Image (cartoon, rainbow, N blue to C red; front, side, top):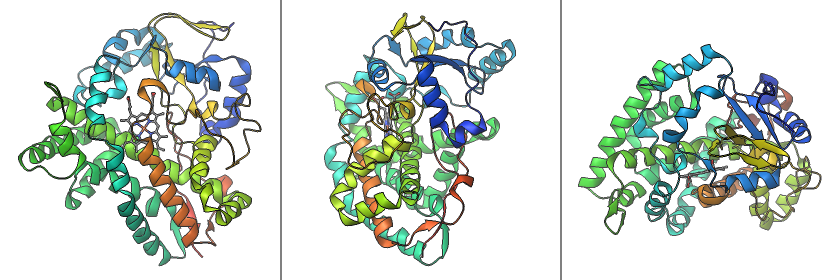
Length: 415
Ligand code: HEM
């Protein structure tokens, strides 16, 4: 049985980011939950099996509310210096001010229930479906721009602009403000030098505050306007909650989908047989997008929680007050759930996938992400039948994020 005093594995090395699946498979064979060390010195238990992932994602004994969890942080640091650094950072000089973290993904019921209900009123299936023609048109414009070059970076030319523009539409960010909005959001998600991140978050908060006031004064047909007016009996989102929600939608809604498009495209570029299957039968596209999410999904480990009491995971007991990270990347390759898991197979059954999480925090944007993924990747391969990598794919640089899996660049030849 693994114990808390097991030295945590130093997992998140550059080699891991290049190919996490082998290391995750080894951990899965070792134990159902294994303590690992994050690069900033925090110990977290990594859960790698599909069944355990599904159970723990929906387990109310695991909390996401850092207002409760911050007292637990110190004892999860092995190195006192790293701990001091972390506490100094998470104090008043925190990179992310409180106002950016009062959102549903970092809260437990009853706060979570209330926030999700109010936001669900604005983020409707009808609103998502109504975006289909606009997303198609935007994609085709970007593909035409790509066609003017023999070689392009697919991340920059397509994978990034579609989800980012869609989030700007949803939030009602006017076209003239998008360059600044993009600069701040890049800094915020990249976690670059802390001073820069702090400045970007201050600018972003000021911008969102002003935007919310604009929507209050002049309601428009966008989701932010609906969020400003969303009511549940006497309940309404506070100003901080509105800013935080807009920020969550921005981060959760674009960084992830960018990498669905990038990783999905790479999967097809390296699997010509699957590409032919899709060219011959377009009805396979929805299943193909599910398979891309399983095979190399954008959210590998962004599911941290902490235990509010001891929790059994198979024969391992994770004590109270420990951080737990449920590896969706590992769950998707669990041979007990997916036979021959390292094979890309667009005819698999995907019921009960955990790529979008499970339980009360199941991704609110999943229908939108699926829609964007299907439109963008299918139109890309239809427009450029000769699309191929412009570099050796083994040399591609993956971003060194703990939580997300995505390419820094994907150079391709269009013809
Ligand atoms: C939550 C994945 C796109 C908004 C989540 C969670 C996952 C996830 C795994 C749950 C995390 C946890 O339980 O700890 C993804 C993937 C995406 C994607 C793989 C793209 C392929 C989007 C988009 C939006 C969005 C496009 C919105 C525009 C959210 C929100 C939550 C969430 C608001 C929090 C839900 C809650 O706490 O109740 N997402 N997401 N996501 N996602 Fe997504």
